[in-house]
Length: 160
Image (cartoon, rainbow, N blue to C red):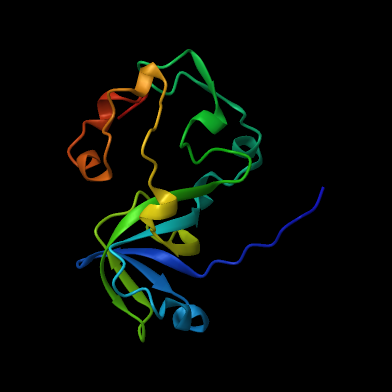
């Protein structure tokens, strides 16, 4: 099996000003041209669940209240998976190329989470017109913006 080496390009930060993506100095020039994009796709490493036990997980026991008793890990957005890579779209508030700061409205990542890559959100390749989901998640929000007010705690089996 081939091994691949991933190197973070930055980290997630959370402070008084909210959420931000802090990009390493040597990668800051790569931010050039992002101004004008309202959203970015962020790939990040779920470092808190990067353990041999979590990397071996292929089945999740009833993660969703309305879901089946077990689902394959690839049918979840769980960070516990063979490669703990996460993908999420984020709204961009502002970009400071010189400081390497991308201010964002929110990200479902912990502070100091390693960022693997940023990609501009392009409707032509990121938005799909006719999407189908299993019945157990059919009542989830259909749009990113509606997720902010959705009761996600009511969805997950072991929600705190």
